[in-house]
Image 1 (cartoon, one colour):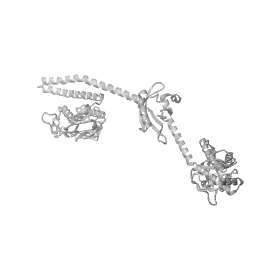
Image 2 (cartoon, helix red, strand yellow):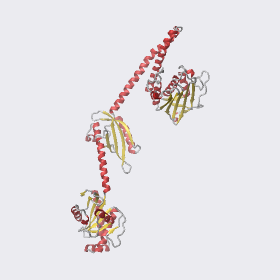
Image 3 (cartoon, one colour):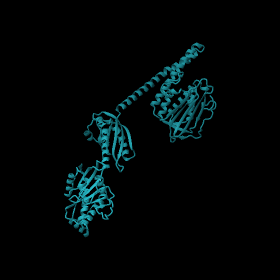
Image 4 (cartoon, helix red, strand yellow):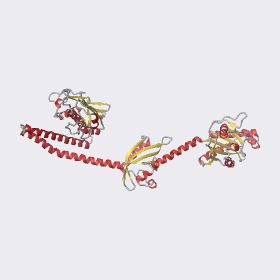
Length: 577
């Protein structure tokens, strides 16, 4: 089956080849060559054969840019050829005048016959092809360059595709005397084209049916193609959208960041980027999109296309905003309620002092009032923790100079009135020999609640309870570790202890907020927490906070460990309290 193909870009190249060969035959030949041309016209076999070989050899040089060996020996109708093109020279009677070795092998493969000098080319054509090919050869002898693809059946392959070019060649008189049959096996090319078409079909199918928006743009940010989902979201037809300036549907507040990232992408500084941005639809509605953008480069590495995949996240953003609003409302309520309750709670605690004076000798009455006072103190502790929590949430990080030794002393002094505090042996090891530049409020919150938690959960029957605090700087992290030999936590409960209002011990009188506040403060500083605990053996909590030493000021005369305090000092000590 022969298929005519319009390859106008090849015709110019074929014309150049034809013109070059015409010059060789008609104008550029020396007297001897002209004599050979005369022999060709008169039918001199030897001279004609030599001239035809020269003609075909020049075609081979022009077509393949390969250096050919000169035809030699008795078989001068065959040319050595290292290219991939079949070359056969025909006269108007369609007789074979010359051919290269590739032609000899190709014809043998296609027909099983040996290509012979002066045999008719029609003897080698498939039975269903001669008429059509004969018509094409006739056109070539009329002076028309032809290019077509032909599906020829060979012994090994019933559907073997070839690309065929027919080049007419004129003699000195200007009459077409020869036609060069140039043929090349394009089976691999056809297979690659078929695979490419399959890929294109698959891509178009995915492109059109994708549940997300897919956009192809040029480097001027003009949309070349987009799928239906994209136009549906923005409420534009493709024609309407094409008439809009680039980025005109992007929310004004998001345009600067979009341009900045696209500039970095096109310059090669970024391979891809993702961005949440707003788009304004045709009706004026604002929608949110999560956009991932990549660059496609040409063979020279220059940006060619921009591919973006956009997902509609409007519902998610609205849910986030609603959650933030409700969280802020809740924080405000907790803060106000806590402040409003602090006054009455302070009055109740003051009333207890009066009761102690008035009913000191009435042991029965004091027993009841002591229970009442314990509940009031617990309520007061909860209020203080809630206020601390809302402050952490609302307050921005404010770095300031922090002396850890002073902070440790203040924290221990604050919890010194806790029950069993005097029984505990505190081991303090501060290895940070410089003052920090960090958020003092957050570090204080972390340190205070970790120490308080360790004190609250000592074992009553433990004769040597201890709490060890170690602070160090390693690998760009400030590490705070608090270890105790207290009650420990059951393995199945350990994942819950940092949750709000969670108490791992049913006998606990705490608020259930301490470790939750610690977690919140650590996360605010982009840190992390690790917990190791074994029931009835103790607990170790490690806090890792990213910290750059570039922010600190070296502290003169600082020590890696605080010495034992003197009488009257704050309780920072390595000895028993």
